[in-house]
Length: 260
Ligand code: ADP
Image 1 (spheres, rainbow, N blue to C red):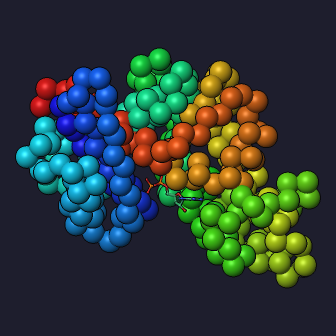
Image 2: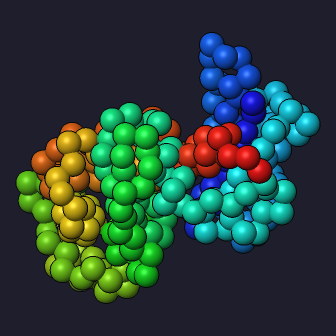
Image 3: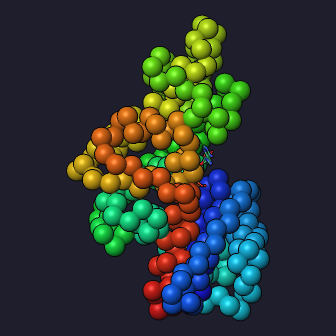
Protein backbone atom coordinates (compact mmCIF):
# COMPACT_ATOMS: atom_id res chain seq x y z
CA UNK A 1 0.00 0.00 0.00
CA UNK A 2 1.33 3.45 -0.93
CA UNK A 3 -0.49 6.52 0.37
CA UNK A 4 0.10 10.26 0.24
CA UNK A 5 -0.93 12.90 2.79
CA UNK A 6 -0.95 16.56 1.80
CA UNK A 7 -1.17 19.23 4.48
CA UNK A 8 -1.94 22.52 2.78
CA UNK A 9 -1.17 24.92 5.64
CA UNK A 10 -1.63 28.67 5.88
CA UNK A 11 2.11 29.20 5.36
CA UNK A 12 3.71 25.93 4.25
CA UNK A 13 2.41 22.95 2.25
CA UNK A 14 3.75 19.60 3.40
CA UNK A 15 3.57 16.28 1.54
CA UNK A 16 4.32 12.83 2.92
CA UNK A 17 4.39 9.54 1.01
CA UNK A 18 4.16 6.36 3.07
CA UNK A 19 5.23 3.21 1.28
CA UNK A 20 4.43 0.08 3.27
CA UNK A 21 4.39 -2.33 0.32
CA UNK A 22 7.48 -4.01 1.75
CA UNK A 23 6.04 -5.68 4.88
CA UNK A 24 9.39 -5.56 6.71
CA UNK A 25 10.12 -1.91 6.12
CA UNK A 26 7.91 1.16 5.84
CA UNK A 27 9.56 3.97 3.86
CA UNK A 28 8.47 7.56 4.38
CA UNK A 29 9.29 10.53 2.12
CA UNK A 30 8.83 14.19 3.06
CA UNK A 31 8.49 17.32 0.88
CA UNK A 32 7.72 20.94 1.81
CA UNK A 33 7.11 24.16 -0.11
CA UNK A 34 5.49 27.55 0.56
CA UNK A 35 1.70 27.44 0.15
CA UNK A 36 1.72 30.68 -1.87
CA UNK A 37 -1.44 32.23 -3.25
CA UNK A 38 -2.91 29.15 -4.98
CA UNK A 39 -3.30 26.13 -2.67
CA UNK A 40 -4.56 24.06 -5.58
CA UNK A 41 -1.51 24.66 -7.81
CA UNK A 42 0.73 24.14 -4.79
CA UNK A 43 -0.97 20.80 -4.04
CA UNK A 44 -0.35 19.66 -7.62
CA UNK A 45 3.30 20.71 -7.50
CA UNK A 46 3.80 19.11 -4.10
CA UNK A 47 2.44 15.80 -5.37
CA UNK A 48 4.81 15.95 -8.36
CA UNK A 49 7.76 16.58 -6.03
CA UNK A 50 6.90 13.78 -3.63
CA UNK A 51 6.46 11.34 -6.53
CA UNK A 52 9.86 12.37 -7.89
CA UNK A 53 11.69 12.04 -4.57
CA UNK A 54 10.12 8.64 -3.84
CA UNK A 55 10.64 7.41 -7.45
CA UNK A 56 6.94 6.54 -7.70
CA UNK A 57 4.48 7.31 -10.48
CA UNK A 58 0.91 8.47 -9.91
CA UNK A 59 -0.26 4.93 -10.86
CA UNK A 60 1.63 3.53 -7.85
CA UNK A 61 -0.41 5.60 -5.38
CA UNK A 62 -3.36 3.79 -3.80
CA UNK A 63 -4.89 6.71 -1.94
CA UNK A 64 -4.37 10.41 -1.29
CA UNK A 65 -5.74 12.43 1.63
CA UNK A 66 -5.59 16.17 2.19
CA UNK A 67 -5.69 18.18 5.38
CA UNK A 68 -4.89 21.74 6.45
CA UNK A 69 -6.72 24.97 5.73
CA UNK A 70 -6.46 24.54 1.93
CA UNK A 71 -7.55 20.88 1.87
CA UNK A 72 -10.88 21.47 0.12
CA UNK A 73 -9.15 23.06 -2.89
CA UNK A 74 -7.26 19.89 -3.86
CA UNK A 75 -9.27 18.07 -6.55
CA UNK A 76 -7.40 14.76 -6.80
CA UNK A 77 -7.80 13.46 -3.22
CA UNK A 78 -9.80 10.43 -2.07
CA UNK A 79 -10.69 12.13 1.19
CA UNK A 80 -10.19 15.30 3.20
CA UNK A 81 -9.54 14.89 6.93
CA UNK A 82 -9.59 17.55 9.66
CA UNK A 83 -6.30 18.96 10.89
CA UNK A 84 -6.83 17.97 14.51
CA UNK A 85 -7.35 14.29 13.63
CA UNK A 86 -4.32 14.24 11.32
CA UNK A 87 -1.96 16.09 13.67
CA UNK A 88 -2.89 13.80 16.53
CA UNK A 89 -2.18 10.67 14.50
CA UNK A 90 1.03 11.95 12.90
CA UNK A 91 2.46 13.30 16.16
CA UNK A 92 1.70 10.03 17.92
CA UNK A 93 3.66 8.17 15.20
CA UNK A 94 6.62 10.59 15.40
CA UNK A 95 6.72 10.74 19.22
CA UNK A 96 5.19 7.49 20.42
CA UNK A 97 3.80 7.47 23.94
CA UNK A 98 2.84 11.17 23.99
CA UNK A 99 -0.43 12.03 25.66
CA UNK A 100 -0.53 15.63 24.44
CA UNK A 101 0.31 17.32 21.15
CA UNK A 102 1.21 21.00 21.04
CA UNK A 103 1.18 22.10 17.42
CA UNK A 104 2.15 25.67 16.59
CA UNK A 105 1.86 26.62 12.95
CA UNK A 106 1.92 29.77 10.86
CA UNK A 107 -1.47 31.09 11.90
CA UNK A 108 -2.87 28.84 14.59
CA UNK A 109 -1.94 26.83 17.64
CA UNK A 110 -3.55 23.63 18.86
CA UNK A 111 -3.39 21.60 22.04
CA UNK A 112 -4.63 18.03 21.54
CA UNK A 113 -5.08 15.35 24.18
CA UNK A 114 -4.54 11.94 22.58
CA UNK A 115 -4.75 8.29 23.51
CA UNK A 116 -2.01 5.70 22.93
CA UNK A 117 -3.13 5.15 19.33
CA UNK A 118 -3.07 8.84 18.47
CA UNK A 119 -6.83 9.26 18.61
CA UNK A 120 -8.20 12.63 19.70
CA UNK A 121 -9.63 12.77 23.23
CA UNK A 122 -10.06 16.55 23.44
CA UNK A 123 -8.55 19.69 21.95
CA UNK A 124 -8.33 23.48 22.07
CA UNK A 125 -7.45 25.54 19.04
CA UNK A 126 -6.55 29.20 18.66
CA UNK A 127 -7.16 30.20 15.06
CA UNK A 128 -8.85 33.52 15.71
CA UNK A 129 -5.78 35.69 16.23
CA UNK A 130 -2.06 35.44 15.54
CA UNK A 131 -1.02 35.58 19.23
CA UNK A 132 0.97 32.48 20.11
CA UNK A 133 1.59 31.52 16.47
CA UNK A 134 4.40 31.64 13.93
CA UNK A 135 2.94 34.81 12.42
CA UNK A 136 3.42 36.66 15.72
CA UNK A 137 7.12 35.75 15.67
CA UNK A 138 7.53 36.55 11.97
CA UNK A 139 6.09 40.06 12.34
CA UNK A 140 7.87 40.94 15.57
CA UNK A 141 11.25 39.49 14.54
CA UNK A 142 11.05 41.47 11.28
CA UNK A 143 10.70 44.62 13.42
CA UNK A 144 14.04 43.60 14.99
CA UNK A 145 15.65 42.95 11.60
CA UNK A 146 15.91 39.24 12.38
CA UNK A 147 14.70 36.06 10.72
CA UNK A 148 12.60 33.66 12.81
CA UNK A 149 15.23 30.96 12.39
CA UNK A 150 17.77 33.28 14.18
CA UNK A 151 15.67 33.78 17.30
CA UNK A 152 16.93 30.70 19.14
CA UNK A 153 20.57 31.81 19.18
CA UNK A 154 19.71 35.34 20.06
CA UNK A 155 17.63 35.20 23.23
CA UNK A 156 18.86 36.40 26.63
CA UNK A 157 16.36 34.68 28.92
CA UNK A 158 18.12 35.96 32.06
CA UNK A 159 17.33 39.58 31.18
CA UNK A 160 14.14 39.29 29.19
CA UNK A 161 12.08 42.39 28.45
CA UNK A 162 8.43 41.61 29.22
CA UNK A 163 6.16 42.05 26.19
CA UNK A 164 2.69 42.96 27.44
CA UNK A 165 0.70 42.92 24.18
CA UNK A 166 -0.61 39.56 23.01
CA UNK A 167 -1.92 41.21 19.83
CA UNK A 168 0.63 40.99 17.01
CA UNK A 169 0.11 44.55 15.82
CA UNK A 170 0.47 46.06 19.31
CA UNK A 171 3.42 43.79 20.12
CA UNK A 172 5.22 45.06 17.01
CA UNK A 173 4.67 48.64 18.24
CA UNK A 174 5.92 47.61 21.69
CA UNK A 175 9.09 46.11 20.15
CA UNK A 176 9.78 49.34 18.25
CA UNK A 177 9.26 51.31 21.49
CA UNK A 178 11.69 49.06 23.43
CA UNK A 179 14.32 49.42 20.69
CA UNK A 180 13.91 53.20 20.86
CA UNK A 181 14.57 53.03 24.63
CA UNK A 182 17.82 51.15 23.98
CA UNK A 183 16.69 47.77 25.34
CA UNK A 184 19.06 45.12 23.89
CA UNK A 185 17.63 43.01 21.05
CA UNK A 186 18.52 39.82 22.93
CA UNK A 187 16.25 40.83 25.82
CA UNK A 188 13.39 41.72 23.47
CA UNK A 189 13.71 38.39 21.65
CA UNK A 190 13.54 36.54 24.96
CA UNK A 191 10.44 38.58 25.84
CA UNK A 192 8.77 37.63 22.55
CA UNK A 193 9.55 33.93 22.94
CA UNK A 194 8.32 34.08 26.52
CA UNK A 195 5.09 35.75 25.38
CA UNK A 196 4.34 33.04 22.81
CA UNK A 197 5.06 30.27 25.32
CA UNK A 198 2.95 31.90 28.05
CA UNK A 199 0.06 31.81 25.61
CA UNK A 200 0.69 28.17 24.64
CA UNK A 201 1.20 27.05 28.25
CA UNK A 202 -2.00 28.86 29.24
CA UNK A 203 -3.91 26.75 26.71
CA UNK A 204 -2.12 23.53 27.71
CA UNK A 205 -2.88 23.92 31.41
CA UNK A 206 -6.62 23.66 30.66
CA UNK A 207 -5.93 19.90 30.48
CA UNK A 208 -4.45 17.60 33.11
CA UNK A 209 -0.64 17.54 33.20
CA UNK A 210 0.70 15.21 30.46
CA UNK A 211 3.60 12.83 31.09
CA UNK A 212 5.00 13.41 27.58
CA UNK A 213 4.30 16.15 25.03
CA UNK A 214 4.92 15.98 21.27
CA UNK A 215 5.76 19.51 20.11
CA UNK A 216 5.00 19.82 16.38
CA UNK A 217 4.39 22.41 13.64
CA UNK A 218 6.96 24.69 12.03
CA UNK A 219 7.37 26.79 15.18
CA UNK A 220 8.58 23.71 17.07
CA UNK A 221 11.79 24.01 14.99
CA UNK A 222 12.55 27.31 16.70
CA UNK A 223 15.29 26.60 19.27
CA UNK A 224 14.31 29.64 21.34
CA UNK A 225 10.69 28.50 21.60
CA UNK A 226 11.88 25.02 22.54
CA UNK A 227 13.88 26.50 25.45
CA UNK A 228 11.12 28.87 26.56
CA UNK A 229 8.42 26.17 26.43
CA UNK A 230 10.56 23.77 28.42
CA UNK A 231 10.83 26.46 31.13
CA UNK A 232 7.04 26.86 31.24
CA UNK A 233 5.96 23.21 31.12
CA UNK A 234 7.24 20.90 33.77
CA UNK A 235 7.16 17.74 31.64
CA UNK A 236 9.05 15.83 28.95
CA UNK A 237 8.80 17.62 25.58
CA UNK A 238 9.76 15.71 22.43
CA UNK A 239 10.46 17.58 19.19
CA UNK A 240 10.55 15.03 16.38
CA UNK A 241 12.88 15.59 13.43
CA UNK A 242 9.87 15.86 11.10
CA UNK A 243 7.80 17.97 13.52
CA UNK A 244 6.39 20.14 10.72
CA UNK A 245 5.06 17.09 8.86
CA UNK A 246 2.82 15.64 11.58
CA UNK A 247 -0.42 16.64 9.81
CA UNK A 248 0.60 15.32 6.39
CA UNK A 249 1.95 12.10 7.90
CA UNK A 250 -1.24 11.61 9.91
CA UNK A 251 -3.32 12.07 6.73
CA UNK A 252 -1.24 9.44 4.87
CA UNK A 253 -1.49 6.97 7.77
CA UNK A 254 -5.22 7.45 8.35
CA UNK A 255 -6.13 7.09 4.66
CA UNK A 256 -4.16 3.84 4.48
CA UNK A 257 -6.64 2.33 6.96
CA UNK A 258 -9.86 3.73 5.48
CA UNK A 259 -12.01 2.09 2.83
CA UNK A 260 -12.51 4.87 0.28
P1 ADP B 1 1.01 26.02 8.62
O1 ADP B 1 0.57 24.56 8.56
O2 ADP B 1 0.00 26.91 9.28
O3 ADP B 1 1.47 26.54 7.30
P2 ADP B 1 3.55 25.15 9.78
O4 ADP B 1 3.34 24.13 10.85
O5 ADP B 1 4.01 24.65 8.45
O6 ADP B 1 2.25 26.06 9.64
O7 ADP B 1 4.59 26.21 10.33
C1 ADP B 1 4.86 27.41 9.65
C2 ADP B 1 5.53 28.35 10.65
O8 ADP B 1 6.74 27.76 11.11
C3 ADP B 1 5.89 29.68 10.05
O9 ADP B 1 5.38 30.70 10.90
C4 ADP B 1 7.41 29.69 10.04
O10 ADP B 1 7.94 30.96 10.31
C5 ADP B 1 7.76 28.72 11.16
N1 ADP B 1 9.04 28.05 10.93
C6 ADP B 1 9.33 27.15 9.98
N2 ADP B 1 10.62 26.74 10.07
C7 ADP B 1 11.16 27.41 11.13
C8 ADP B 1 12.46 27.45 11.75
N3 ADP B 1 13.47 26.70 11.29
N4 ADP B 1 12.63 28.26 12.81
C9 ADP B 1 11.62 29.00 13.26
N5 ADP B 1 10.37 29.02 12.75
C10 ADP B 1 10.14 28.25 11.68
